[in-house]
Length: 64
Image 1 (cartoon, one colour):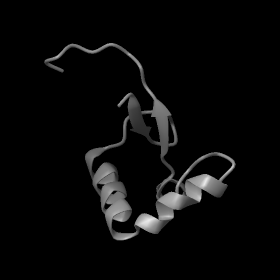
Image 2: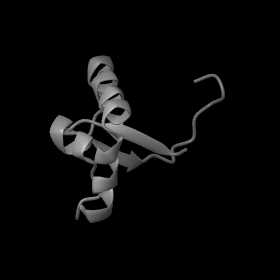
Image 3: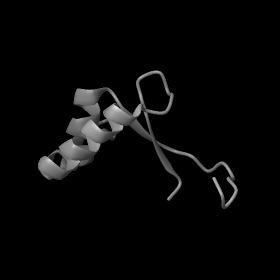
């Protein structure tokens, strides 16, 4: 999809942070609608876990 979730430093999230974020999105999906009113286009989950979703259009091989 060309999207990547990164931590506050712009690096890939660790596995536990990614799992917590995924669980928060499943358990509290209404928090995703915060993107509509947020100036920085971040969900409640992103604000709470200090993460961001960025576009990543780098070419990768099929095996990666």
